[in-house]
Length: 334
Image 1 (cartoon, rainbow, N blue to C red):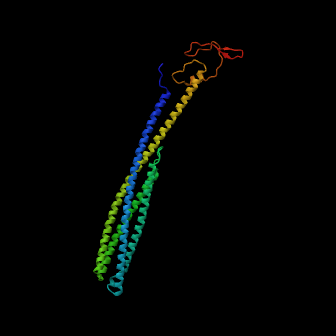
Image 2: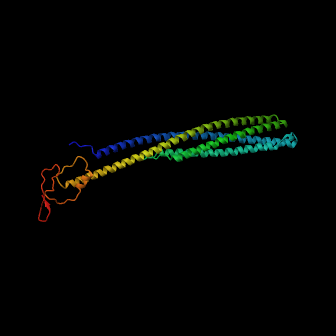
Image 3: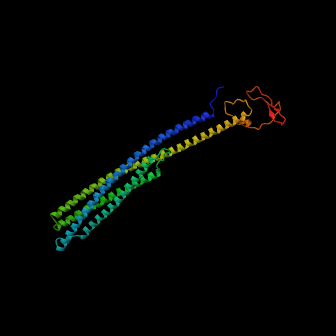
């Protein structure tokens, strides 16, 4: 009699299929880790852009210091003119004092901006190092990055870029106001007789202010480009989050099916072993090709009791059946 594929064979096929699926998922995880490495490179590029911006702010800070020194010279010159009566009636000390305070405020704002740039740079560096540690972890279950933490870091960088953009716009307005005030001051100094070297110094400062204005506009454009880059990273992180959730759900379902298949196989083997032991007590009976059903299993495990000769029936496939006889102690023997 040809044997039909039993339940154990079907479960073995299911287990093999589950293993193939797990191998496919491992390949997908490897691809996701490669994408994570690419994201690290983008974070590094963003960090370098922030470093360039910090260098530009350092240059602006130096220019502000030089401009403040020039304003001090103008103030000293105007005070001397006022004390000697040379054009003192046209001199407004509040104008120079206001100009000096404006420069000090700009220096303070630049210092705060540089501090925020540094904090953002450190946050990006920590995120990059954490992702690198995840990639170097030993083989086994893949520890995927915390998407919530990742999105918080990107949101923080976006907020910093937004604040920097506002800061650049404010600085540009302040520099424009400074340019107007400087023009008015130059006009008054020229009316009071300030010519020659003093006029050349004022013209040089005007050129410096014009240069700083262009630098601020350029920084604003670069900041907008950086904001676009962060937005692209944020969108990519959302895609990663969906992939991670779907991957985790599929892995959990595969593990559940794998455990269920193992339990069914173990239960099937126990039933087969018990059926073989139960039927072996009658001796000479052939094992069926198919697994025992519930009624056959119950009959094979029913307690043995004596029956009359007419009630006894030979086992299937066995023609040499012999009725038992009893010895002097009442025990059956053949």
